[in-house]
Length: 369
Ligand SMILES: Cc1ncc(C[n+]2csc(CCOP(=O)(O)OP(=O)(O)O)c2C)c(N)n1
Ligand SMILES: [Mg+2]
Image (tube, rainbow, N blue to C red; front, side):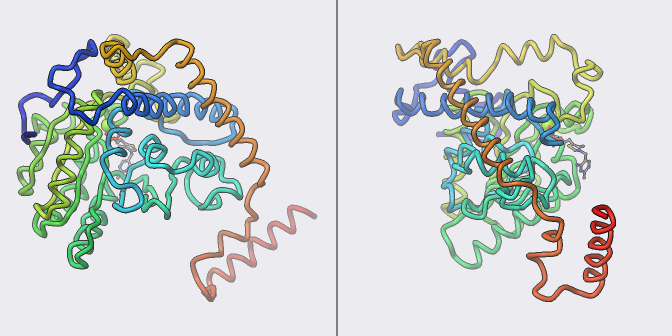
């Protein structure tokens, strides 16, 4: 039985890798190893993308290092390609674990012709039509009201799909968040809301921006249960998210899950974290010691199924090779032609856009002359 509003985050695996609750049967060593592979792959993806950023090959990136258990665990709790996902900008690990090809994510970050959006979105703001992973919006919490609307549509149409909507702790202070939560609650819409509480909204700590003792407590105001889970314990995340998703799917209305985790890296490349302006190295150190990948490795060790240093190194090398190959392949497709910004929206271009296209063409021809 998984209860909402527990005083402490629900945990299955303690920080030392020892189970504190009996491990559900489905967590076989084979599954735990798969989860480990997904988490390590995501961690290394972060490292490689930061290098690409420093090389000037992309211009924006928001890492998810430290939050892998939350995102991989959530990905494993929804039906990829069936349920609709309204994500936020830090969710590339969620996307990768759901099966969005790394090549697509890299192409989007580089804005090449192989990018499904063809460079028309900000880097690191990907989407996947095939996986019903909706295009990311930078505006904090702006995905929440449309996610509630998407869930309402699912209810009216009587489909067995649900909607999953993710956001950070900071997003729960935005008006849009409350509007969306209210609408989902009032309409008993099948929406699973998941807060990736990494305890910071850029340089604003969670205590500075809300007087609520926790995030999950906010669910009560909207008539839905709020579950509180250790977001660095992948077993707990999967158990709680699967339970909450099942409840939503059954028609019991929306639910909120708060995953307590931590962003160990900087907010994005536009962040002063490196200059230690808003949080201490000691605080980061405490959470580095609570690393979700390390915890899973300790669990596997406890189960007598350790990941050997060679296996770990091979997984890392394989991800680096995969990123390198995808970058070269994406860059070889070239940059989209400027004309494409006028395509794919209107069957007949309105006159003001025809004027803009003509002006841009003249400018391009002038630049070439
Ligand atoms: C409406 C709006 N206000 C401000 C910003 C600037 N901004 C970008 S990210 C961010 C912090 C969001 O924090 P949180 O929701 O906790 O997500 P996290 O980045 O920590 O994962 C802010 C304030 C924005 N993008 N949109
Ligand atoms: Mg945050």
